[in-house]
Image 1: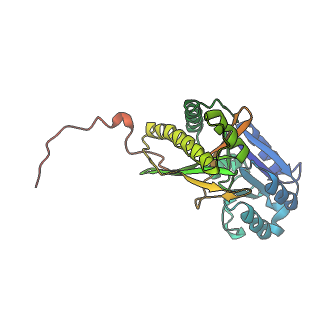
Image 2 (image 1 turned 120 degrees about the vertical axis):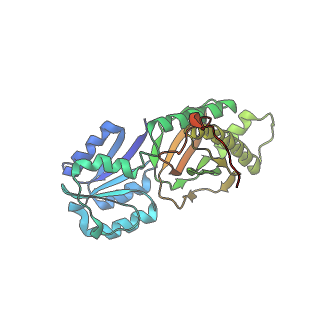
Length: 296
C-alpha cells in the first residue's frame, strides 16, 4: 500500500483532528500540531509530507500569510482548509477564502484522495512500478530492500549525485529521479566495478544514468501493459548539495527508498499526465476488422 503523510493543524480534540484520525484506516500516517507557527516548523523539517489539513475555524485570521509561507517552502504541497462541518476546500496555488465550496466534513477522505491523485497512483500501478524497479536493480547486480512507497510533494531534496530522465507518450508524461549522496554513489560504484581507483564524479553520474535507464526501461513495460506507450529521453544530471528540484506541474510524486547494505538510493516517479481510459489496449491491437481499402 502507498503511505500518505498528513499534517493536521487543529486542537487535539477538534472536529477536524478527529475526522483526520480516521484517515489512518486508509494507510495515512497522521501527525498533528495545534497552530500555524508549529505547522510551518514541521513543514520545514519533515522529509515525508503528502498533505496538510487545517481547521480554518481556529486559524482563518492568518490564512494568507500562512499560505504564502507554505508556497515558498513547497509550491505544490496540497493544503485542505476545513472551515466547519459544511465547508471543505483544497487550494494549490491561489489562497483565497472567496473560493470556499460547500462540502461535508465526512468527504475529507475523498478530497484527500483527489488532491493526492489516487487515480494516477493506484495500488496496482505502484506495486508494479516498485516491482519493476527491484527487478531492474537486481539485473544490475544490486540487491536492495525498499521502504514503503509514499506520496509527496514534487519538490525533491536532491542528493549530491542525481540522474533525471523524462518519459512521454500520447497518453502519458512524467519523469524519474535517482538520487544518492556522494559516499553512497561511490559505495555502489565500488561494488559494481572492478576498478580500484576512486571514481571521478562523472563516472558516478554515468553509473546512476545507466541504472536510471534500466529502471525506466522496466517501468516502460509496466506502462505499455496498460496501453500507455512512451519514449525515454537521455538522462540529465544534477550536481549539488542541499539543492532542490521540482517540475512545473502540480502532480505529487511517488517516492521509494532502496537500501543497498551500507548505501541508500532514492527513487522518485512523478506522473504529470496519464489518460484514464486509453483508446485501445494491447490485447485489442490485433483485433481490427477486415475490409476493403479504396483509394480516391
